[in-house]
Amino acid sequence: MSLTEEIKTEARRLGFSLVAVTTPDPPPHWPTFEHWLSLGRHGSMDYLTDNRRADPRLVLPECKSILMLAMSYPDPSSGTQNNSPRPTGRVASYAWGRDYHLLIPEHLKNLAAFIEKQVGNGTTHRWYTDTGPIMERDLAQRAGLGWIGKNTCLINPKMGSYLLLAEILLGIQLEPDTPFEADRCGKCTRCINACPTGCILPDRTIDARLCLSYQTIENKKEIPANLRRLMGNWVFGCDVCQQVCPWNRFASRDHDPSFNAQPGMPNPDLIAELALSPTEFNHKFKDSPVKRSKKRGYLRNIAVALGNSGDSAAIQALEIAVQKSESLIREHALWAINKIKKDDFDHE
Image (cartoon, rainbow, N blue to C red; front, side, top):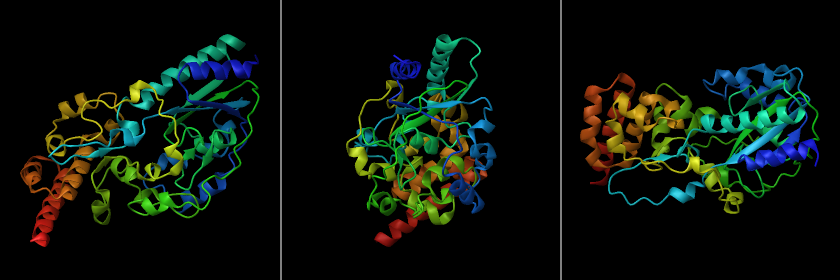
């Protein structure tokens, strides 16, 4: 067995669903990405402007190979049953369990240690999962893990798109895999048609400023008024463009049990959530991706979802939030109260 195959075998043993190798050459879609940035479609995500993405060797000059990895997370349809009489929210399925920013690095560290053991200590390497200046999907496609779909997600023909990507840049030469050249989206536009805000663009990019995942997680300020009704009951992330993708009908359901839904997921009780104290929020979402939105952002999202619920039973909780919360939450709670009352009036 070659060194490359030994490393791939170990990666699978550690729980990675997909593993392949590519070269450290510049990513092919860098010019498209650079143009996307110039249009401001990244919103407030200024970390994306790090130009080291143009060439992996700017991240690790000694890089000779890049090990691309993917780990599966739960299919959102596995958690859609909800019989609660009270209004509930929706959380993107990758965030139902433990934060992948905590889980995947543990496996990357172990895999890097395995590689060092095979080739000798001191092997130059650097690893990331959604945290480094790396064009992960571009490199994953070049490694043969799948193609970049119209919804901008990496899609594997057997695993679908419920995948979290990671990579190890290595100062050793491994056998590169064949790039995935085929575009298997064909004429399908289901993701484009289903997007609640129309954020998916014809050039296989998205306007992040319209994306519900961006608004509920990355945006730390007010949610634009014209987008609030479109949020429905999403309070952290959004799965819509993946749920309608035909390739996810055939996806493997295997995933690390750490990603399984924790108590209160995937449909948190909105009225109860709005009353969370800082201590309760930190305790409930310890080691959860939801902490990324911070308490103020999460309760802002909860208030919008309550407004969209149209449930007059939520008004009392929203009025308490108006009295006791900071300005960001208060403004969205007021919007929610007015929306519920207006919806009630319109239905009379």
